Image 1 (cartoon, helix red, strand yellow):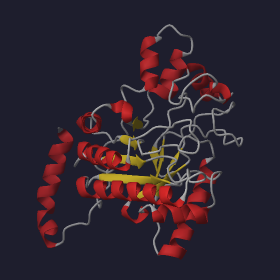
Image 2 (image 1 turned 60 degrees about the horizontal axis):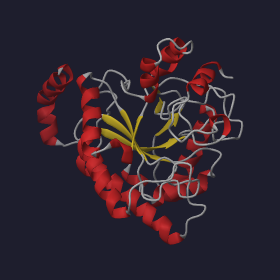
Image 3 (image 1 turned 90 degrees about the horizontal axis):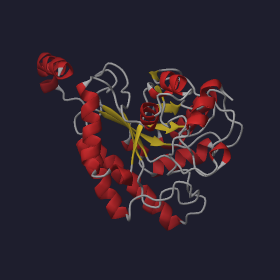
Image 4 (image 1 turned 180 degrees about the vertical axis):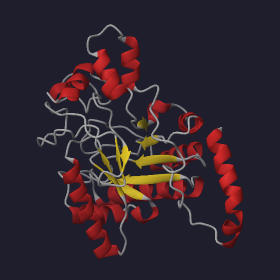
Length: 321
């Protein structure tokens, strides 16, 4: 409630200026409207810690991962999506914190990789789902990362499918612009090992990046922050040269403390990275993937499914082995 009171008083003071020149959409900085990043009280890590108080790994996992601000991912498992996003953002707003949400439900999701296959039943179903997602967020401050992997996942798609995906993403960005005014939306750009900067810039622009606040890199991957920063700057150089604009970017640092060994699916020897923060070489460093959640039935997560929390993997990731 105290955040709303401060915002109301600030609005009263700024009214004459607002009448003179209304700010453009998405001018507000959601981070400046809040007092830090939101810690998901119902994350898979929190649930495991609560259910396993006597486990020898619990204190370390609780201290280093469970209480760190991380994104919550939303998809078909989230139930009525507008209700789900509304409840999550509303809880963060109550505590005056900034929530990070991931929209992960695009039609033909992970079409080429298949480890996280699924998504909406059709482009029309996705359009309805994302409109409700944005409606749940509404006017409250938030960060949304839009459809990880969706632009890197073109290798096995034909041009009709690619155009269909671009239209879905562009439509999603239009919905956020229509329904949310205190939310920064970042369109995912993959990672330095997936594609070159020129191709990535072309795909981002084709999917409507100009409508978004920025783009994200390294989601669910392991490349160092320095590598990701260089990649993002190269993308911006391409965007500037080809299309005449650039965008800020965020880096997923949840699992990049030891950098990448070239593997993306549950590689051994990885480590948690820098905590969520503004700056750090990017607009923000964020934990978008939850450390310890499986990438799929592969690597040190053999026998698991994507998104399943693996306590031994999480524990080893704290120490880097």
